[in-house]
Length: 263
Image (cartoon, rainbow, N blue to C red; front, side, top):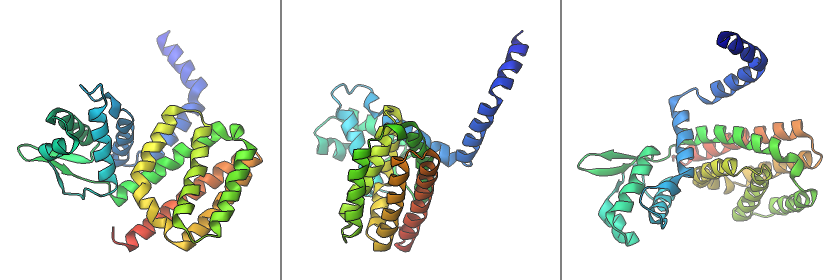
């Protein structure tokens, strides 16, 4: 009976299983990609650090995490428990817990009798982050497209048009972030929002490089306007395709900019 039930289940769900297989194959071409997903998931649960009910260890972890991602701590830099504990005015225990979490995130490696050394977040990691972000943000759009208010879309459309006329990378970055935040929030999924939020934190330093180039800002603004119009008309297929293509093209632009700077 169990064998028959298993066969019936397989037959009923074969299309779903095939789709899932394609999804996994598309994301898991390397173990590094899997490791990156684990980093994102662990970043979501930093609040569970043992022995830190007041959030001290959580705050230290978050600060160190951001410094590594923003390259304030360069790859190869040593993170010593005593100086960090002195900076935050805590004992070594929460510092040790934060460093342990960063080691699990593969952002730091622990060398016995020497300490913790920064591994960093590389350009290869950035490429993988963009690919994962594309899948997750398209999912958010599919789940929330019908809940996005036309009035909000009209406001963000005006903001995009105004930013396109300004030679202001900061303004463009702010408008860009707001549009993508709207898409993510529309899914009404805290877990999905958390995953994408961690991705954005990892990618932010690199994304800011692209905002400094006028040609990239102009092209991105045009893509945003097309996307907003597709969402406003509830054209799911077109909006999904435009968002996916926009993120893929953004990845190429940012990687090119990063490579030109030798980062």
